[in-house]
Image: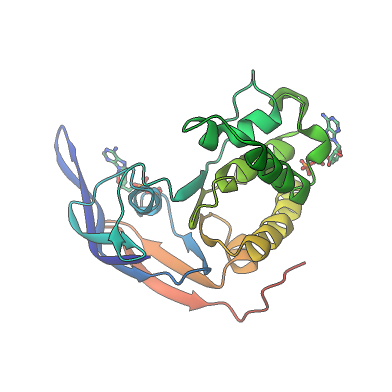
Length: 225
Ligand code: ADP
Ligand code: ADP
């Protein structure tokens, strides 16, 4: 993943907001990067560009040597809210990224069940989201993000709405899932301790305009507990 001289400004009624200015960032395959910084420093904008949901107004974003495009399908996303479909069971929710494209095969179902088992949710596959706790729903959302084997997992404050104990449990879980899948991961968080716990590298951003002001390499032992 390569960001080169990345710029993004939004047109507003009163002019332009410079959300990102000259962001350079390389992310290795399989790396875990956390992004921290105050509100408005461009974290979400950067994640949306990585996902192909926003076009940069300057510079470039590429994944595996190809420009990031909307719908390239190579990205899994997790948001602050689990956003599961309440009328579908957990298995169907996890299968959703695949069933939007084709009728899920039995191999797809096996894959989804393996992910649910990895997240400790195997016995909840046939339950509706409303029957699960917030932490369990968020774990299911992570399974959904991984079901199509994305080469990039993007998480925007995935645990921001959860209590501290649930967060700690899920951090251990995400660390294990990341090691087992080998996916490249980018996490936005307001928690420095969460960033340092999960990531190999922490990117610190600053606002007006949004830019990278510091990079911290976390002394690393991949397994956290
Ligand atoms: P963060 O995620 O770090 O809080 P954002 O990427 O959401 O930062 O926002 C960066 C800046 O861009 C902020 O000043 C924000 O108000 C502005 N911004 C974000 N999205 C839009 C938009 N759709 N239209 C106009 N301004 C936006
Ligand atoms: P999390 O830390 O993922 O939010 P909780 O602390 O809420 O999970 O729940 C811990 C365990 O309690 C779960 O792994 C599950 O086994 C059980 N549990 C929680 N909520 C429910 C529920 N609504 N139905 C059945 N079992 C539940």
